[in-house]
Length: 287
Image: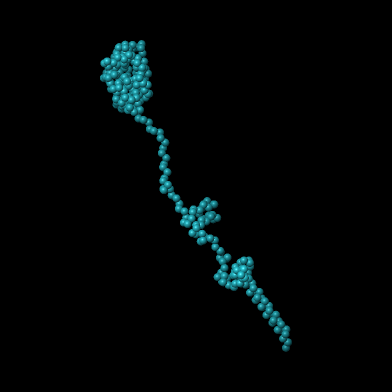
């Protein structure tokens, strides 16, 4: 017994064109009906197409998926005689109901379920959205032994999105360590030798509050001793400041003037004493 039973009151001529092109492959989601056609001995393999949206009948799903079908001259498309031109016109005239030994059997299945032979005609069944409708050609077999469509009624899982790997988030500005500037001034530029510890010749950072302490001071050789600084002084005119011997000596590049004058005075006194003693010896008569 052919599975594509006649629907009462429907008379449609054979060879009606498909209503919509549909799309190749499984329906991507549950909004359409996936239609599988297995040609078996007719050649052509197994074809899977999607009938988008809701489908009122099995015939509508088959045509909306884009398959070309041919009904019978007597019963119209209530019996499916050919799908995509198979069987050929030489093998089947499609005048009356196809024989039970060579016909298209009708199947259905929920997504992820198993195929079930339909006990309703192609115009009497409404495929649920997201389900599968199947057609398989049965040649020289009993209806109880009709071959199921050779495709598992299960939509493949969608492929994972090829998104690029996430980059690590930059730390907040508040979490980035920042070296505090030295007390009293800005950060000094690095020394010319690369800033290694103990290197000499690099610039010295001097803050506003430490400039007086870091200013160069006179060496011990240049500083006057307490005795020299408070020793003999010479008075100057109104236009000449008073200088200590130590300062004068340093300015003139020699012995302090006070010390030199004392030496000359002592030498003069000594010479004078010698002259006076010699004169006394000359003036005194010899005994």
